[in-house]
Image (cartoon, rainbow, N blue to C red; front, side):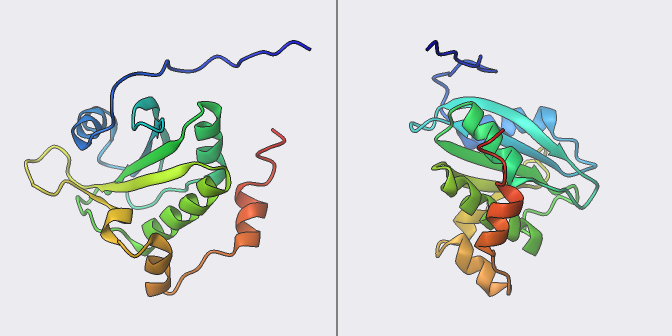
Length: 171
């Protein structure tokens, strides 16, 4: 039996992920008039494997599929994922929807043995403000699932598996 490797979109680099690097990448990619989700794929040593804008939404909303994020990470053999999305109004405060999506992706990626390292909310990246981004997981040291409970939400695991990851392995 012959084995075939799928070509990688980008070769692995020795470049470690840092907030400074994220700032440089996102300042040229994020359109501040609409929400955009950017994904950084990392190996186990925090080196960047791949990076890509996965979603673009409206001025105050964006749909994100756990299935797509997992597929992107699995395809490139990522050990960790860092998400970043902007708030066009410049706020770095996570909305209840941001917290929910972070918790959902945290669980979905965990199912396929990939760590969600952080999900950053990007405010006005082109200013000199000290706080141009905030990590959602960092903001809630007791865990993102506890943050969900604090806002009265929860994730139904059966729904997650059926709707977000269903068919992922067969495709």
